[in-house]
Image (cartoon, rainbow over all chains, first blue to last red; front, side):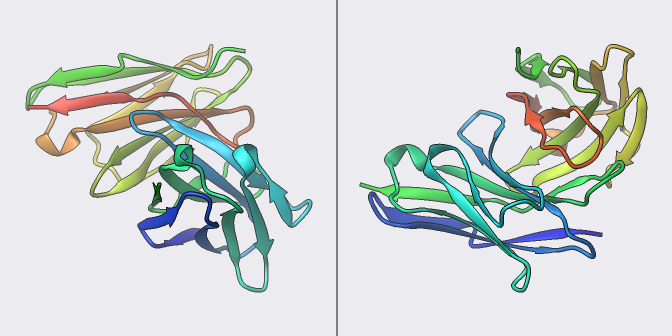
Amino acid sequence: AQSVTQLGSHVSVSEGALVLLRCNYSSSVPPYLFWYVQYPNQGLQLLLKYTSAATLVKGINGFEAEFKKSETSFHLTKPSAHMSDAAEYFCAVSLTGGYQKVTFGTGTKLQVIP
Amino acid sequence: KAGVTQTPRYLIKTRGQQVTLSCSPISGHRSVSWYQQTPGQGLQFLFEYFSETQRNKGNFPGRFSGRQFSNSRSEMNVSTLELGDSALYLCASRPLAGGAEQFFGPGTRLTVL
């Protein structure tokens, strides 16, 4: 079975500062990994995904994440935070092949301070 | 291509009633999953349907059920509503049952009084 741990339920950064949201996964086989963003009263939107190609994955809105197998991590970063980045972010993992369930982390709420 | 649609968007029910939520996936997507989201429990997986068959199931009581139709549209039913069922119910679709990312609808906000 796979699992995801997001460190920090709330993260605050100043506008223009680096955004770093942490995600560690547990999986017996190489997984698929995803980051989603949720704005208030909306569904989740895919930011980026890792599917065993390049380990550095670029997503929308300037976000990127690096898959590190040795650390079982898939942290999300953005060089410079914008006010519009304030939202809740979810890391998710899925095994490959077949009818594999997607497992979500508990989410990290990002606050951007002007 | 139209996104995932969910109806209704908002619903108010009283304890003991039952409710049916509907989800229309993106055209061509054959897998539909349902999630319950609450401030205390976060995003909890309910079940996933593919080709009208339930393929995965979360840890919810039997009051929560679902089904999928031949056109991939899905419904979720909750019987004998409890106050704790108040939540945002999210539907997500994906083209394949495994591996591909999910596309989420806006959710149905259910309030149980």
